[in-house]
Amino acid sequence: MDRQPSMPGASDFSGDVLVVGAGALGGYIASRLAESGQRVAVVARGQRRENIAQHGIVLDMANRRHVVGVKCHDSTATAAAADLVVLATKYANLAEVLAELAGWDKPPRAVLTLQNGVDAPDLAATKLPATQVLAGRVHGFFELVDSVVVHAGVPPEIAFGPWRSAGDAESDLLAVRLAAAGIPFCRPTDIASALWEKFLLASAIGGVGAATGVPVGRLRESPESWSLLSCAMQEIRELAEARGVRLPEGCVDKTLEFVASFPPEATSSLQRDLLERRESEYATLTGAVVRMGRESGLHQPAHDRIVGLLIGNGSLRAEDGPSTPPQKSYTFRT
Image (tube, rainbow, N blue to C red):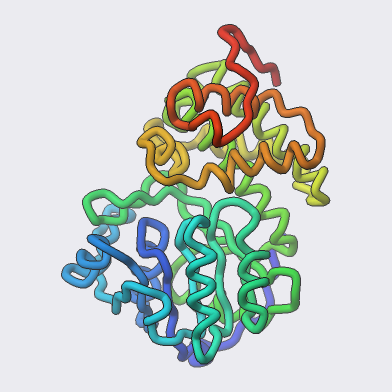
């Protein structure tokens, strides 16, 4: 159930917004907020920073190109203080960013974590005890193509809520900002469950997509790949329950239906990064499922298979994760 309280007026969010990580997702959020007239700055590095400084953020969405200029910093430490910080960087960089935020003279009023996985909100709450942490998850496909943020497929949506504390005022203010920017959102009463639902989706499609080499949008064309995906999701649901998180009834079936609606060539960021041998979020997604499953004493044959295939196709080194050797004939049944 979504929470729908009365919300403050737009005049109540006069402070600045800083978006850390102006890649595909961060670029989308910063673009929409800035285009609605809100004061927004971004943190980006290298060539991405140069592109934004020279050309602004370019977003292709709904058959329209949006171009908006924003202030761009190369470090969170040197950025001007902001009331709201949107953390759109990958989890591997999150601890460094949080340490820089902790060094601000005045801590931000709220931070919104948007990392894949389920570890980011606790890390943010530990590093920024005086700041309200809003845990968030995003549904939607965004890619950075030749410095252009491209949206494809399902309509995007941000789900968010206060993490392990009362934070209704900050949640209300974020809701006003998103509504003004035309960014769809929802406010689940159980944000931990919502994070695990996204974790189930992102980990399973990324791991299975990279293991099989098949675009997520085409996994259903292969009965074995689709069965492996279904079994991986079932194992993550069982893991959630073992860790004290109850997912909605029918969560796996609903998520499979959602995946079946993806464009044929859709891929996940984890899948692309693994297959292209780039730094990835494996450790916070598929790797985290394996790690937590072993901690909880769970049997996870689907994930053993996924890890084995990743090692076999060179996407993962053997030392990066335990696995059961892939079998030539291995069929998963739903």
